[in-house]
Amino acid sequence: MKISTLIIVLPLTATALLAEDVQSTSDAGRWSKEKMQSHRPAMITPPGISTHEQAGKAPSDAVVFFDGTDLSKWKGGKKKDGKTLTWLVKDGYMEVVRGTGQIETLDQIEGDCQWHIEWCTPAEVKGNSQGRGNSGVFIGGYPEVQVLDSFQNDTYPDGQASSLYKASVPLVNASRGPGKWQTYDVICIREKKGADGKLIQPGSITVLHNGVVTQFAVQAGGKNKAGGLRLQDHGNPVRFRNIWARKLNVPAVAAPKK
Image (cartoon, rainbow, N blue to C red; front, top):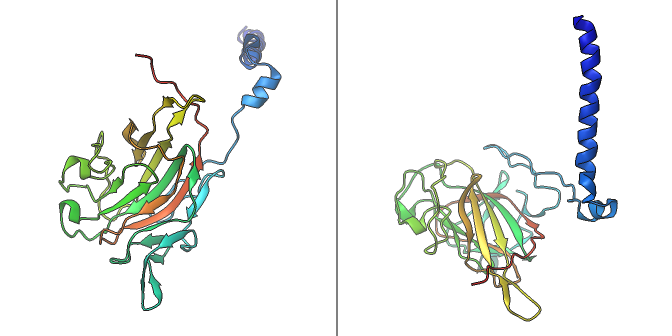
């Protein structure tokens, strides 16, 4: 009796699952074959997972600006005695060399975009407040995203790691300890206007620090249609690696009417 019951139940279950799958695919005719094809999201290879020892691979649709080998996609540094002094590249990372000045990408990313930056403050703790592992990330037309060793290091709230420097305090402090690799994922939404020139959507910036949202859709900057990335020399030997950007096709969301 138990065996025959199983024989009856299993086909019914399989039939029910098949019916559910057909219904979910067609969804009562909401999606035609043509519309499904034109609206289907592009398939990409997601980024690899970074470890302390090694950076993960960039996603397949990213523009890679630093893969740990050289600074061929960057400009900046100071000239002295006919030579350009710039940052150190070693073991898959670049490191700020005090007095060489800021560096920035040769190319810009047009429109809405996602920037990924990995950074590490010195393992040997020196100084405090703003004098400890200080650098900064500047994306064209947006406030500086502060880089700082903010692990058990008190400073003014809008100057700590992942703050929009002197503009917006982070929602939380998601800092790892000194000498630990950390990540920023910065979502930049550009200002959008209609055909009549009126503002449809203001520019905004969202920051994820180590995978945690610390700034969400802060309306600051975004008037520029494109922008590159600039890294700050603040005198501390901060390291950077695995820097890439992705273009985003984010539809405009009209501001609510007053």
